[in-house]
Image 1 (cartoon, each protein chain N blue to C red):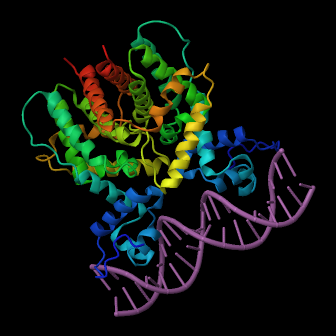
Image 2: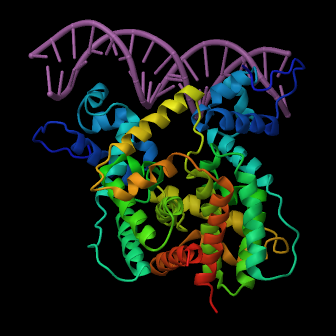
Image 3: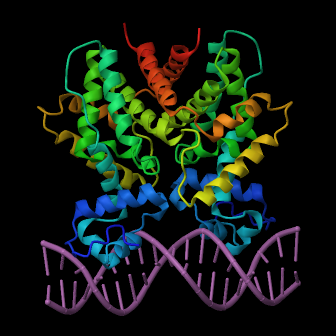
Length: 223
Length: 223
DNA sequence: ACCTGAACACCGTTCAAGT
DNA sequence: ACCTGAACACCGTTCAAGT
């Protein structure tokens, strides 16, 4: 059951533990990420983790750090601000999408890792050059990054953790609940029910989201 | 220390408990909301709560329900879709703003309360009338509601729980971290540091956010 | 219907101690 | 430097029992 049950007993390390924690979160959700669970998965005492991390929050910081570090930022180039911005946001989205169950950690932790700082610097810089004041660029950049996370965490039919059976069960319950709504009071919700339960076309969902965000920025951009 | 230490020993009830839970979350944050803590605050055994709630998650559902129920939806009127939409989003924002520490609960729980369902129905309906297809209206409505939450949870300088001293300490630490960044590598971040730490003009922050969202919707709206 | 008592399996964390 | 052992204070939850 160990997440990396290599017979070669490797030394523990911050990076190794963080990688295991991320993998665990991806498989079983964030609630499964527990000091004690990580310990047994790494064949070690719970207290061993406290050598590598200050406390549990630092472990979660480590998970977030890994995801931010996996963002492959496009080369700095010149071109229309909106195209540049889009490229960066697409890169962030691509890094977060593989980790829907860990994404809840990200928003409050951008400024807690080198990779997150680099990302924030980049986005703020782009907005500044696009004409935003310093406070507006700051707030908009922060909101944009959170929005990418939201796009992933609130995707309809996001695969929850747990066994397939458990998920089917939950899916059925949700459908039953929606279908039982009064057609007089909730006509649109009834029509929308199936689109809440699963995302038929993920690519167009995310493409729409990106378009929305770029349009939003354009809308409040000082001319 | 009880949250409602009324000498008149009232009977427990779902609503009373949920109200106490929300008040507690507002004061001390969601981590403080614990079955056992609620029990002692209400001078009762932890197990007493299980009569009124299936489990802890149901308690959290109760908190979210209260916030959604506090949304004062504007009268249904006809007028340009964007003005109508704005009014509704403003109403949602007004309901959430008083509860920044509980807001993290809201996004995944819209469809779990009557008030949330009414809200979703309303927004989807508006988007449908504005020309959106059923799937697009569903996804956009869901994203919009999450975005209002994001606006509140990621407001710079959002007041964290804990004593004033503890917060000042945290604030100082953050400032120190930001100020210590390399000016060559993070020029924009340094310029932005103060705007991360506190929001100088809350009203313009939220007004900007609303403008952003409406512009986003306009941007992806089918003509 | 509404609440208590005792018990269980699980947490995060500290502190002293080992190598 | 890196890990263990024992212990503490806290969780959520079940089950049987009381009124």
